[in-house]
Image: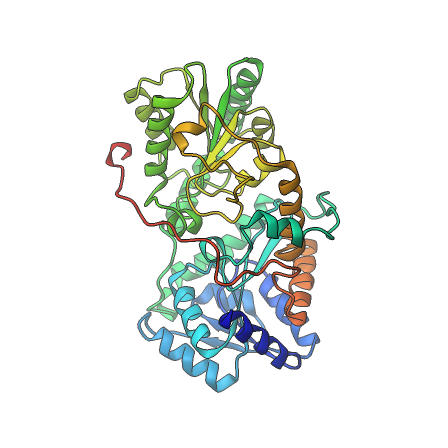
Length: 441
């Protein structure tokens, strides 16, 4: 309660003019638009650029460049906060090393931290959470508290409002990353948080785009086969290997380890007529041969004809008829819950709540998957939408305008995680990393 009281006191103290410090955001104009709107409310907005891409997407007053080392970053930030009277910090990707260090500095300095991310309720929602996400999230995990907090919240309008294109996403990504590659010497000590070099990722994407029509046709044929058959099937949605949900908030070092565990459990415990479908993430860069890894592991476990691989197709259509979904902590699990499907979570996830997701061991899930409680599901989605989600996106003009307006409004009002969605200390634990499963490598 001490931390919550201190935060509330800071919120009351900062009802007037505040100083917002922006760190790295998405490769998108949304942070700049949020700053414009916050300044219209009478606040000041500053930015620390860590690379050329940060500079390109800020393009407004209040920008400062940090060209020092990672070791010098915390000290620089402490001095910066004190000199400029920073009251609030806004960032994307709290597990990036620069942001991990910044959050610790902010905590010592009494600075409020807000995290912006892609929305849990995709496709046209954004996440805005106070002090942390996933293992660090303050969103309640107690069913009774969720039901009580959502009691007077109306059902949201779930209709899609904003669209964004792959071309816009890719164009912004290129605009951010290519200058960092070719003008690295302007920020010589900057270290990327990504696993793959941008040029390698783009090469993988070109290869994927060239084969998109063939992959889509194969996926649609596979889905049609599964839906036409009476045999039960489970779905495992692959996450991006670079995803911090996987890297920081799961017991696995790589998705290869998770795949190995899931297939071994399925082989030993699932009904003989059951099947499992691995669905590739639509933004996978094709740099890891998931198909060959999965098929080799399936053959070794004697699962011939029971393991399917999809690189394309409609996940919602697949999930609607599945016997259940297994996921590390993908937001695809939320879509399955909304469809009333059983979901088993292997990592830390905001939606891994007793009565909502299946809490029994994975080995038991295959034979007796438990569907979510309908009343709790409705309450959780209402509370989620009302407290830590806003409408908008990162890569369209209308979507970034709407998202920036909503985020600035909540920041101005100090209404993050409201109503009733802030529990202190965070109720979830960060999973302990397990030994690597070498058999999947």
